[in-house]
Image (cartoon, rainbow over all chains, first blue to last red; front, top):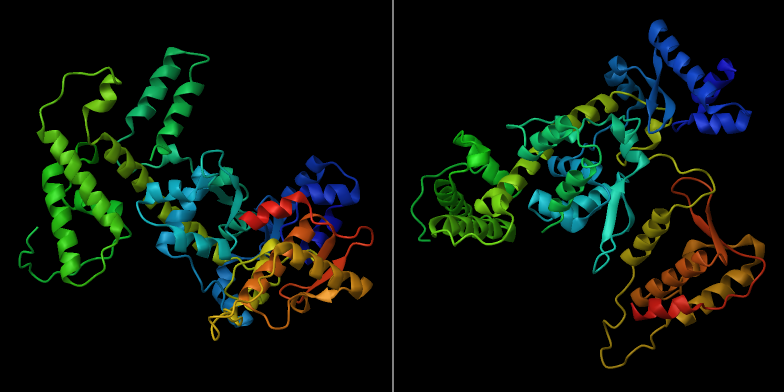
Length: 204
Length: 262
């Protein structure tokens, strides 16, 4: 089974999910996942030119990072040439953390128009429309795509650092308040302050 | 503000008003939670003036922020009104909302670095078929399945060389194609083609006037939505073909009329 899975991973051009393999070969998802993880470890121990990574919810064979420059020569193509601009990265960060989010909400956070940047992100399929917000005007909601995860080498959104862990200045006051409340031991209360804090963002 | 003669300075490019404000705050090493509104406001406005002097178009957002700053400044100068029944703490400091925005924005600025690192690390990994992607980062489309944007891209190609229609003769109005008409025409066209289907491009009227193209495209989407036709693309970026569904004859549903209103 392990060799078969390795073969499947080898020929696939996209991330292969454990669920997919489990369905095709009539196995349990957890078993497939375990096998895939073993293969990941095998490759890492063995070294060689390729490795297996977890990305965008699946597994994919990739070349080792240390060969990046030489592989680019081999492909002789524009490899990773079009990097995202700073505004684009800023915008995608906002979408990633605040999704689903409307254009107006993005603009409120950035303080500038986000039309052009969002178009670029949509063209590159890193962002997509996910629905409509149930407020007057029914504005479009945006979210990140599987390609987004793939582009940044993430397995899932949970791989991103927590927003609360990002420290720029002193910790925020509401953050401290949560901790105090938690310490006091309010059992049902904690859900409420969180929603109130979220609502603050959409005020504008 | 009178434009004072300013020494020539290099103006760094700022992404927006928040970016500029953060820069000013950082430059003066002041606590973000306790912004000295007055000096910061003055500098902010001096900055906008400098931008204008160097003939940079100053985006409207910068002025909005200037107004916000001035408003906060004014409110801080005014004597406090007797305490109303609003949330006590919240309303006390007029700077609070701005500070919260700045703090939030700053986090995302930090995240730019995080995402850049992820991007860097990821571009060092090559996957199969990578050479085929080129600039556009895209996962391969599963064979035989058309994604909505493949249709959109095809539409954009068509529109790019379409004419506006009424350009030459202004007094004579074309007969406008209604969506109902377009659906009927398109459905017939595809039905007549039988099981071979038709090419995406052939679905559009030969004279290719913008409005007709748009109407036909809407008709196509509507028919796809109703499941009366299917679209197939056999390879990534390849031609799209449209096939009729064997069973029903297309009948515009009530939804179509809503679409016309739009």
